[in-house]
Length: 99
Image 1: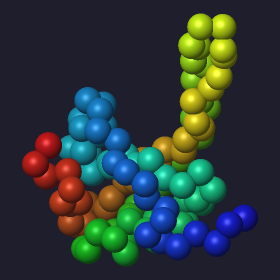
Image 2 (image 1 turned 180 degrees about the vertical axis):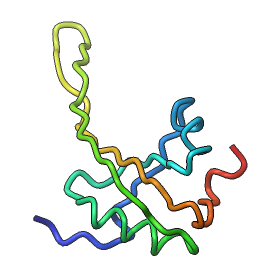
Image 3 (image 1 turned 180 degrees about the horizontal axis):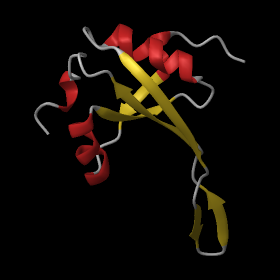
Image 4 (image 1 turned 60 degrees about the horizontal axis):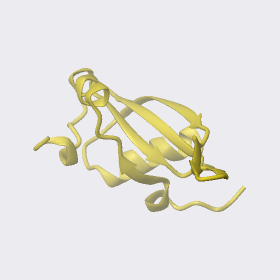
């Protein structure tokens, strides 16, 4: 297990129609480091975004898709996604405000 600091855990937010609809329920979706645990994701969100309190974290591993270029067959990179549920009294995450 690699020693992952909290600022290395969250890679980028997921901006899709489904993730935007979940923001009304205070659920935010992020791509995270493939070796990050739920506790590390919780710690990273609470430290990086002031005033947030995490209620729960759900993670999922996503396999890479098959891609072809002529006869050459390969796969895209594996990723890990985390859905973070904030508590009712928690502040919203500001990076999603203008979207």
